[in-house]
Structures are given as C-alpha cells and as structure tokens.
Length: 117
Length: 108
Image 1 (tube, rainbow over the protein chains, first blue to last red):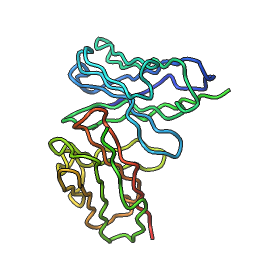
Image 2 (cartoon, each protein chain N blue to C red; image 1 turned 90 degrees about the vertical axis):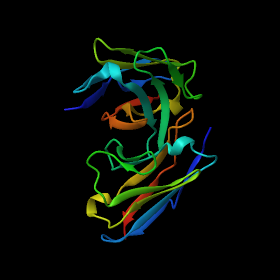
Image 3 (spheres, chains in turn cyan, purple; image 1 turned 135 degrees about the horizontal axis):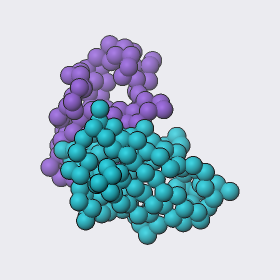
Image 4 (cartoon, rainbow over the protein chains, first blue to last red; image 1 turned 60 degrees about the vertical axis):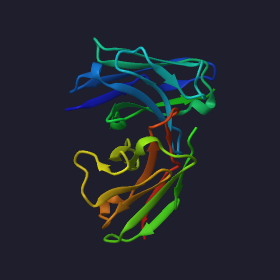
C-alpha cells in the first residue's frame, strides 16, 4: 500500500524548533518530488516547501523562507522538515505530499504543530 | 504569485443535484496545470482532477473538470451523499504553487 506517515508534531513555544518526519512506503520514494503543505485550523491549504527527487532542487514559500529547511534521505525513504524560529502563525496541520504527474496524488494523514506559550 | 479565487464559497444542494464549482486565476495557468482536491472533516485532501480535466485513479466519472487559461470548473454531475465536502483548486504551473480558498458543498 502506498503510504506517507508524518510524525514529530506537538506543542512548542514561540521561537522554538521542531523537526517533522515523513516515512514513505509502498513506492519508490527516490523517484518522486515531495512537498510539505500545511493547513491552519479552520482554514485552507498552504504550500510550504518542495524538494525534487535527488534533493538538489528546493523551494520554499515566502512565509517560511529562512526559517524552515526541507531535506530527504532516500536510503531511509524519509522526508523531513526542520522548523526553526516558530511563530504562532505556523500553527497548523502539516501534510507530507507526493507529487506525481505534477499534481499531489498521495497525502499523509498530517501532524499537528501548535506554537503557543 | 497566482491567486486562485473559488466561487461560490458555499453551495447548498440536495443529493442527485448537479454541482458546479468555479476557480478563477489572477493570470493564465501554465499548460492547464490545474488540479482539484476534495477534503472531508478530519481527513487529508484527496486528488480528484489534474491537468484541468484528467480524473485521478479511482475517481468516479460523475466528477469532471474543464476550463483553460484562467477559468476552470469542477462539475459533479449527480451528488452522492459522500460528495458533501470542501473542494480546493490548485495551480502547479508556476512557483509558488497556490491553492484556492476552498468551496464547501453542503446538504440543503
């Protein structure tokens, strides 16, 4: 079964850091571009970051540029998102997403990040 | 950045009726790289349509996508009870990738 499972979410204070992980299974992880998308409570979807299949092409939304770092370990079939200098407005469910045929065909169940004192 | 505006914000319909959702882009969407997703409460979004009109794997043919340039539509020909949800459009032709604000299809 093709699956993405996120972990690492939780409660963190403003200014703190958190590292999200996304374990992929059921497909050849190293062949796909991967993304992080977030959804603040009760709101819509916001694209956060993406990394190409070999890890050499990366882009970020302006809202997280300079604070978040995406990475991947193709040997471990895992995608990461290192989040530093967290703000209240970063509170959201973070989804790990596979890109196929240029659209997002597989989504994880999401992990909740809450930034609050 | 391409801004996607979805309308209407909420559509109140009965099972069996036809639903038509609109997604308007602030500029032309490259090569019709426009997708539609369905999201139910507490669940992750699910891909319905990509490349403006291609149905994703396993998506029933009552879902259809159309449009080009900067105007796109998602049509659900006959609403089933499981279709009442929030729908998002997304463009993936230009960076940054952007989503519309969502449109809720609710039971009348």
